[in-house]
Length: 574
Image (cartoon, rainbow, N blue to C red):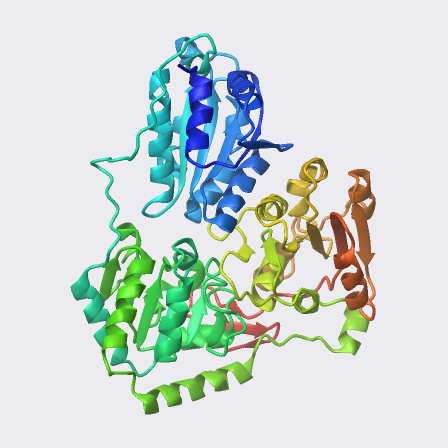
């Protein structure tokens, strides 16, 4: 016999939950009391509920498990909305436990009441409101199943306070399995479509493998690598898919899309067959859909049927989990002696190498440029890659620094790169790094951020101290909202409306006030040695690097055009 709060906690234990990220309040105090009485789940007390959501999100991205958030009713719950939307856009499994006013007061505009189910409806896979305490174990079982299966995503469980009353006891029963008649995700791809895809791929003269975050979430990186290596395919990843194929591999073209590499975008545009795996043809990839890859036959593998042909028509759609689909494709290829036309493939690779020579992520990194304009942000990221042997977990916020981190650090492993791809949420970088360090304490974790983004959740420096999370924060400080300013330079004739940040804190002193270390780097000549020393320091270190304020991210697609139309530098476009 257990109370609703005790059943909730026991159900989470039965689901294998290790951490809950949250912040207490009146509507959830019964739950917090039940948490206090057990020792199997550790609660991480954040300083803002948004950070709790981001930590749960990143814990899921890092481990593949479902993250859990606990927030009180009203403002506590609404503070998680941005984090829920962030997870939803990137298909991250997460269970959000939101407190609610007692059932008898719902609809009366009671203190700290809000319709969390209604507010979150557009940004969750599903939501529940507990109406009877004894249903809590079954609802939790369903919530975790829905969050993690099919196309993953967040699920809200709204819990009125009276449903957790410690004086009301019920028989605890956790179901062994879940069977929801209206929700039956497809796992195995259609055999005929897979065979057709193989035949089409083997007939290609200019193939490319375009993979997205679904490969990482579906734990299919090994199968993707085997397929690419077997057929010697050029590979490009989306921002969310970085690490699915080794970033240092010879067949890797880099990221594609709005700020993708020249060679990746040109290869996509001129391909005759595109094998899209776990990617959704996001607008940051396609540019103008009417001009997208005009001569390509598209094979699209995705677990979500709604994503197939949503923006770009798939000629050969395959609905299913990417891992079993790729496994079946590999089996068919290994049974067959047929391979791609070697002569045509060699010609295709020769053309790709020519495109690589054209740009290759070049930037003004000579000593004279650095002396005149300051440290180049690209050089900082390249130096970080060198100093960490390419093995760190990198988190980022959103902006220019995010693109520099995506382009100039080579990710060889899945779940090594954590960022907000779909929603583009500033403020995720530090909570993401905290959760990654919690999940992988043996690894170096670096948050690459900007002075705009880091201030959105900088209060979590306090949480880092409480739970001993020694992440490294690398702030590419240009005293401005860099990506906004870049657009204003390019599209608004240099009218910098509200993109300069004129009153910045001394980040070194701020970090020290929270009990951490701070380092300021301003000299291009000593940047590498100072960065190396900072990375070797114990504990959390805030590394404030002053970078060239005039630097832009290139390449950059020309808006409204095809994938091959790009700015390659400030005065050069294709």
